[in-house]
Length: 462
Ligand code: UD1
Ligand code: CA
Image 1 (spheres, rainbow, N blue to C red):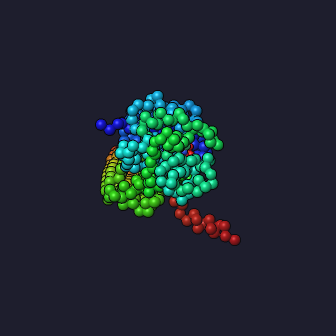
Image 2: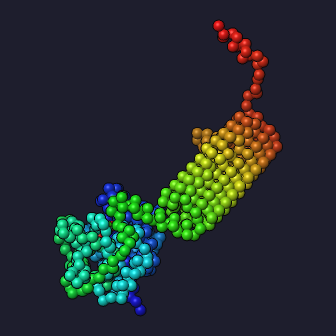
């Protein structure tokens, strides 16, 4: 039987180069925190109880972020370097196993690459297999030192490297698979003899070599996949790559995406076939979009469920709402949380909705605020209609029965009920219940003064 794999994920550092109050691994790229990406990749390889996340800075927040995965945690109270972080796992992760070490700041690493690394280690007699790659700009990475026969002799960190060594473009990706027995035997031999005074895990290469063991490197072609996020520039690059992977996956699954490089879609979002997404769209959170939908440019859909055939016209913002089949919203509509639009309902430009149900075939096409409203079926909400849902202390409901017609510029002072089949005259201020099938007019009566304007002109003319 293959010996099992323990995975150590180092995530205790603050990430000084991020210049942030937030621990680096809690920064987000591609819709998730960096640590979530790494834990997800590790989870594809081994059982959760064999994954050990080393925490230190903002340990509680880091734990909360990935606790649901069932992984284990090791505390590195003081961050004395990557070798020190590994050593802090010795008690809990020290059994007979292969040991994969990953850094919590490498969110782009794929499960396939990691599986390949483990296979290479299993098939060899080396003490360690690590991933290496060539970079045009290797600054910040540890450089690989190879002997005359091409074998890996050491990794030297940037701050400990000579000018000549800094010119080496082959770097250590920080992704390792060790023979566990040899790792635990030799990890204590690493000394903090470098300008930073840290225990560098990378020194294990020279230590193992000195002890007579072989170390091998796999040269990985796709350097991008091995990106370690150290600065916010790296973070933006990681985000770009992850977003690109998500939109490529969606396109291959039958979603049309225009100018995909401008579109932001979270990894857990689902979009049905033949839906089309315009430029600069964002679909984030736990959103689900059905088949044959159109999401117009610059719209944002967050934590919302859209049925089939839904049209979201450009510049629309939708949060925490449900839109049934063939609903149309926008352009320039704003759906704040808690709306439910039934089939074929339509909402037009400059309409704001909050905690509102809009029944089948009902329409609110222009310039309205509808908040805390239960609006039935086949209702016309005229331009400029406002539900006055707030009395300065509490929010109140507006209820409108099926088939009602609310004239333009109506002011509905909640709590208020408008009966089914009734009419509200344009410009009305409605403060009392309107019975079903009634006409309510709540405005001052028009008065015409015959000839008044003409008389005024004559009076004022010199
Ligand atoms: C590290 C490698 C470098 C490699 C690069 C690849 C070392 C000494 N250097 O450098 O060879 O090219 O990654 O991306 O390993 N951490 C802890 N505890 C500590 C120190 C760090 O948990 O005491 C964690 C950090 O939170 C981080 C990870 O280890 O997630 C890597 O640390 P970082 O400081 O980013 O290492 P690099 O300088 O990038
Ligand atoms: Ca790093």
